[in-house]
Length: 210
Image 1 (cartoon, rainbow, N blue to C red):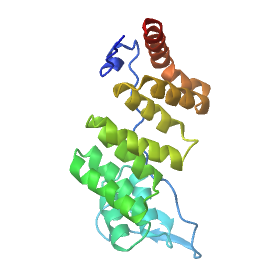
Image 2 (image 1 turned 135 degrees about the vertical axis):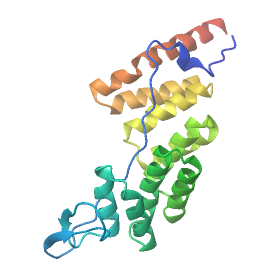
Image 3 (image 1 turned 45 degrees about the vertical axis):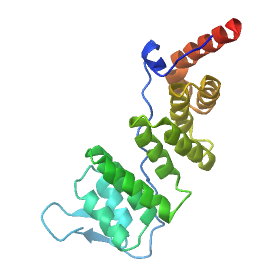
Image 4 (image 1 turned 180 degrees about the vertical axis):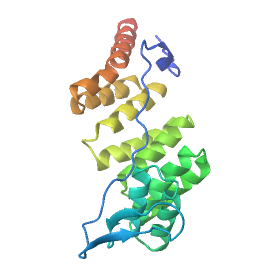
């Protein structure tokens, strides 16, 4: 029995959406010094209270977490100053993607990996970009690399499972989705229930027809 599942997700009762981009939220250890006020760019806008010893990446991250448009400029400043370059490129890539500038997003994630080939978030985010482009071969590659780097990260296995299902690798998809369910909270694990059940029925039917 030949099964084409390129559009398998269309037949799942509750079509699951992949997990979105993964932002780097790491902060460096606080440097010595007293807290103070810092006007990030010396121009208009409100002054943010934060330690005066914060590095450029920390400043950018604070703005990013507040959805402040100045985060883009701040990440570029961090890159220019060599402060957490891989992390800065990664988070800048997410900003570019949300702005619809996908080519620039690809460039940012790739440059992040040039500085740190084992950068988990950049591999994961590249997987998401390739998934959206329906380049499932490269999406799978980056998800698998991300899973090797962070084997306890549930979302990687969910996205990998979707990619494998859309690539007609049903056994692989089931393995990844079951791994996701084993790592996710009980509530989050339900996200995969319908898809796992659907794939199990297809695999079972294929075996019986062989």
